[in-house]
Length: 211
Image 1 (cartoon, rainbow, N blue to C red):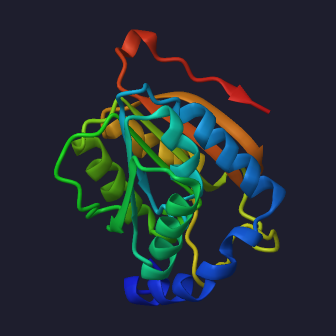
Image 2 (image 1 turned 45 degrees about the vertical axis):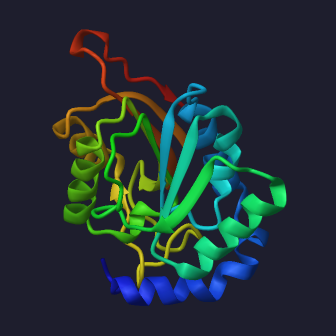
């Protein structure tokens, strides 16, 4: 992590009110794919890490049993709660938590995250994925800045000063080592994608890539 937890939290506190007004087409496409692949059952518990203003959590909520949103930014969490109230969504809860300490003391069925894990170093990402695995979900949907080829710092999806995206291979290895099977790879852009990982027998593992 190139900035401290407190520095990242303060940065997103400042962005909270206007955060929903931004985002590139690739970001929005990535978010849509995360929601699509989360596909919770009506009684599933979903954990959305790096939930921000609840963009993913609130879209998933109508199809899930309950959704737990976790973030490090109080400003983002407050906006997520406001949006849930405005929309009459009652099966969500938002609180402080981070990837390696999500403040969840129960197993969950699905874990999602979008455009958040790239703030961690590769070692921290591996630790975070291990923490997710310990929650025993049957599906983990990871949307983020990730490199399908050589990194290009001139692209708008990350800032080398504060972000630390991983290659798709690095993420795939970490997921596999944590006991997941990578079942889908969605390539949105050379530097943006969605990985779907599930707890399935090895003989059923299928890796497909949409170009």
